[in-house]
Length: 343
Ligand code: MRU
Image (tube, rainbow, N blue to C red; front, side, top):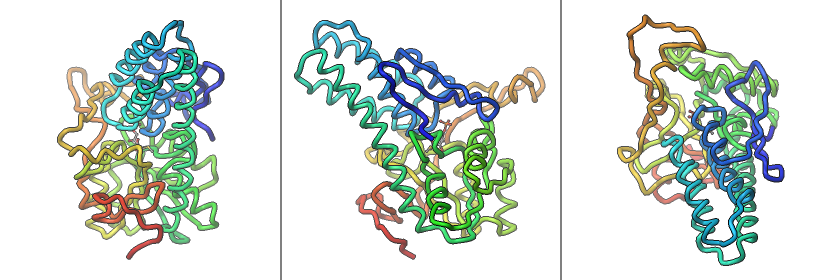
């Protein structure tokens, strides 16, 4: 399943707010349309945000009427600002924008050549993500035993990436190798990415999935129902993994119960120049908590907190699985992954 595609000046992607009830495709033609889709979470998931950000610049370049290279660079700079102001936490979005803008500024061809260069670079970013996820799957599958039950949180599947997924990519790869893997997926309040998207993807692939409320994680670990936890990440900094709200409590519970806690993510999610205190954790509308869909579930006048992500210190992380291999404790600082499991 390819989640995002470029078709001659149009970005085609799935409207994730409509899943699992309806498969609706968006056809986006401007940077502002991409920005709106990101803000409203029609497009979401860190690696997909990177690809979407790249394609927003591609749309700007492709449809530009600029006559001079400098004029196009100015338009791209404006588009870059618009996209950077959508969601603050997933680093992939900033990484993709900076990668394209740095290369565009250093490009010294004609304005037409520059426009095509930007489109090509966006296509490269998308293709690299699809390939990275296959490699993450291959490396991560070595950590999964036949018969394992894996707990995952939020959606780190094909829908959160260009293709295949990170955490779900590992599970998919293990299943493709013939291992019997069961998944326990948390519903992931308030936006329900686990219930709506992870359950949808796994059911579609025929991988057994059981849904639990976020409040049930302690109980299923106490009952020894979980062999491994695998989640994705929105940003990996020097001291922590930043991922969907609720990840931290799962990691603490996993440590308490001796369950390995793995993070599967491409290197575009690494931000090792920063520490967690420097990262903006997105705060979303309290109404996402006080309502489920159109229905208010809390008394009028009651407000709510709604941080979209939390911070899991690295001491809770057994390993990070990236496209180059598996980074165990201490390897993150050197970025020297192992390709086989180290006990
Ligand atoms: O708010 P979302 O749905 O964009 O958050 C997504 C997550 O937190 C995912 O776990 C993360 O982006 C990793 S996706 C491979």
